[in-house]
Length: 275
Image (tube, rainbow, N blue to C red; front, side):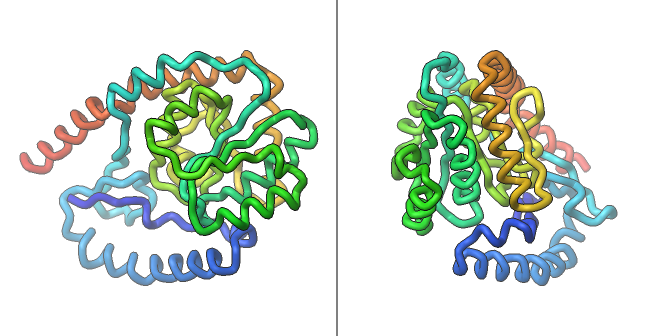
């Protein structure tokens, strides 16, 4: 049995220009490595597997025994804890992004979209939780775009602190360029917060229109405008925002607990053993 951790994801070329020189170079090296090593891995390992568990079957050759399977979840305690957070209706409208400050995480893209949104909603706030090598550049970008005072960098917080912060925000913006199955998206859904993400990678499979907004990736200005419009929809329509949040909460509770995922996983292992 083979687990695929999402290493086949590639950054759309239109997004490379948002990266620093170093980050762009690292991503190009990564993509070349995937092309070379990916073929070898598929030939040497995948061809001998009885079962391949992957986020998307389309990432593999048609003749391989691939099953689409979500390999992540939340424990029931966290689902119940996040499920108790009240829906937020206070001002200001507050957006959060969470993760390591790496180029491919898309925080620079998030700041560009928020800066555009902030011109129409000057009381809004953008919280960035995390740390990493891109932090200084992100702070500089926020100031250059005129929204520096509205963008807060909280640094690296404990998971418990992150879950507490969910009570103080309205929306998770997750503009990552390639993520397998980000736990933070499930945590936002469980807390009743709609998710805004790009229509690529794992988040595009986790988020549906009933509980989030997915933005297609055609060109850079379009992505920024669509992220801006997604935030605008959620900021100006509190009823829709709350409805989407409640739906996401139900989806996680019914599908994404580790108890449910674990039982499905056990059944798959049993099928392999029996075969």
